[in-house]
Image 1 (tube, rainbow, N blue to C red):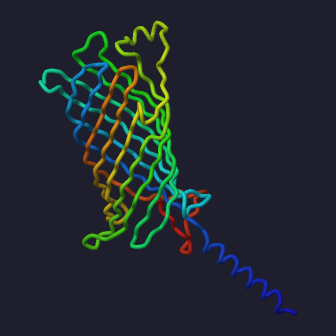
Image 2 (tube, rainbow, N blue to C red; image 1 turned 60 degrees about the vertical axis):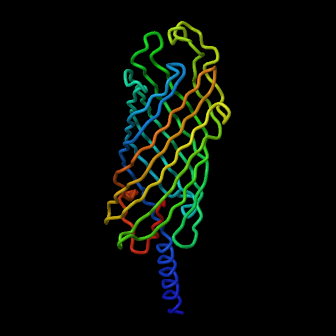
Image 3 (cartoon, helix red, strand yellow; image 1 turned 180 degrees about the horizontal axis):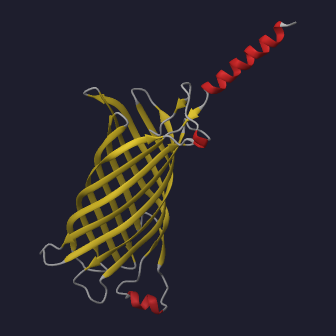
Length: 279
């Protein structure tokens, strides 16, 4: 009979070890990048001409496996701010572009053979910006504001190059629907200020508002800090109230990435913890 308590203690110890083995740690993947490349701006509210020049941006991306199903669901947060400097074909007029973007995605992922991972899911984004044509006097600014529901996904490949761990990823995002702001053709913003608020908000669909974002990146893992390089392409095409807008950028991406642990109550992960990364 005295052996019974020892058996119970052993069972409790085994259960405790089993629970510890199931502990899941979900590091946050943070990426800070700078972008430099070419921009094309065309807005018929300001001018019938297209302007070409330089685009620059800074971006922060955050990704983490979700607590309710870390093996399958990943949350992504994207924040960026950019400035474009462009000139007309004659190089005698300048158009500036500026904008802030915020996006949030939930991606369901599948593990495939050969180090491949594929994911897809819904997302939403808020874009606020403007185009400014220096030579115009009555209507020098065209505001750009939109809230969209998007479809996003990614294809990731884990491999090694010269014995360096590398994660190569392609991530596209395309608009599904939403709403956006646009004034009427030749309508001054002063008229809006005086109270003319008709036909300023429009439903977005592929017939009048198309956006697509393409990001190809590679994370070269040098220890705890990764070097991130890549290519980023954005496309915005709208046509409403007899105003046509085309904004396209092609940029080189460089930055740093890393994984960070969110330590609740200061607890450190144990040797038996299961680490599930976002990518």
